[in-house]
Length: 122
Image (cartoon, rainbow, N blue to C red; front, top):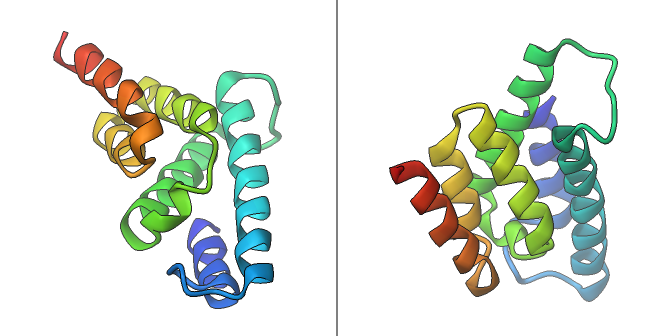
């Protein structure tokens, strides 16, 4: 399912920054909303009706695909959401993925990258 989300999103919105303004705004809105939802589930604020292993696979694949194939999309997500996602990934022992996500979050996420590095090295 994660592959389908990223693939269809890349067809509709493109992977780069050369987009019509309507496509850029739409991509940012949909991506923010979906990743906010994922972060809320990771924090335990929303309950899902699927098996935890299925959810973990979906989130890991989705974030991994966005990090590797569409890193420009990450800059459109709020830093607070990136923090929540990285915290959830770290809880699953996906520290490298969490770090990669934050690194691509831009200058605003660099403080969180430093915090994560301290936690990982401890």
